[in-house]
Image 1: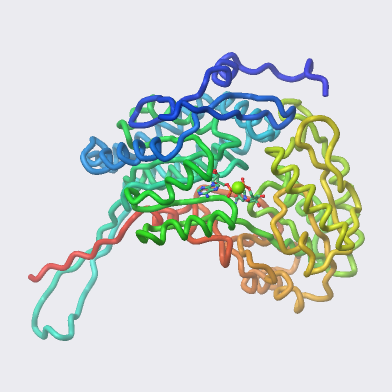
Image 2: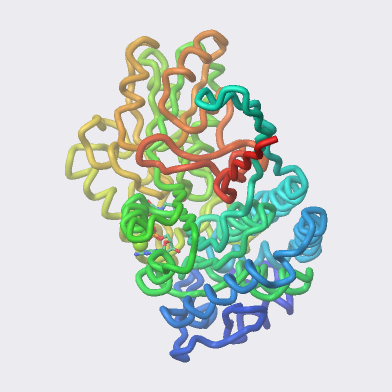
Length: 500
Ligand code: NAI
Ligand code: MG
């Protein structure tokens, strides 16, 4: 890979990664109490990119204390909804002013193409904050006519208010580092909560730049605290902390279950956005070109590191070969390379661990009899590259069909008729998303109703919007991100009843 042709890192990004990165607690940038740091790697090369403070129990304790004080007694607790909304909007403006910095950091830290981070990750984060800024002034209760059958003749006036749930712990993953921080922070701040955010250890940099802008925007100290560190230490300490009212998590279903166990001790509120094994269904009457391009995008976008990736491709039998060959051809034409190269369409996986996990799934698939129409191997060089892969000769029992791979690997299987496909598509512990490709609108609606998934895309895939709720059925999670549904996660309803 010729580095000479790559765009230069902005000087501000260069110095951002060169300096040891501290954590944000109570409005101040601090080292970990232990003074420890951890290394962050550039996944395109495997080289160390930055050194970041390694938070642990004591740092989480300090952050929770700051968030509690900010929630109960600080200026945030007295701020009007309108002023909260203005601050969130201002944060969106600041992110927009630093768009290129964020895009570069995201590409360096996560490996994704710079061209994608510029048009997807960062603009979506900006839009999310603006959308949520508007909600700050619109979180309303109801007036409720009550009858109270055991108090004949008595009169009551009853209403509900929605109050912030309190201090919130938020643990996010590495696949869309900035965007996941936005999905979590936006509704929490609109609702008036205070936050301790723990970014993923693989990709903490954009959240730390966001922290700088949160301070610059003028959020009071302690409203947003950012503790960097590992899941087993900082993350576990946050999930277990008795001083937080709610924990919001995005990541693996395995860790989601640990979060629930930790939260069960004091019954803190929990929302979870977990894994998926989303079916993408192409009916015989679909527009083939659109469906093939869409099926390729469904699995290969973000290198398959999407919880909603269309990783099980089901194709009606008469067009199976055409669709599979079309998706394989699309896969072969994807330019894989380092994120900064302008022609890169797919970067490396995020980490060596993820590379090993995806390679392990490929090995397991081949051992069980799957065949690769294209790809099937890791890439050359020191970066964490995997070839875009289409697997056939797969069946419902195989590990590659049942488990989330979280890499650019799709399993393609034929199905006989529209009547058969819903139970097959639903045959998974997950229920995050699904895709349908057909030119028959009634068939599309029928299938959409039968699929047990939080999102169903029809003749499109990976369409996200701050206004559209996103989340999972079954083991894909609890609660919804984005849209006004997200505010439910961050508010308590109070019923007030007055004898009149
Ligand atoms: P993970 O679930 O371990 O990590 C996600 C976040 O949880 C990170 O911030 C991590 O530090 C934290 N964490 C890890 N262990 C924790 C614990 N015991 N207590 C509290 N927090 C903890 O995911 P990982 O290991 O990075 O990836 C493994 C698999 O998880 C992937 O192959 C993929 O299948 C799935 N995943 C799903 C994501 C989604 O968007 N739903 C995102 C990332 C991973
Ligand atoms: Mg893990």
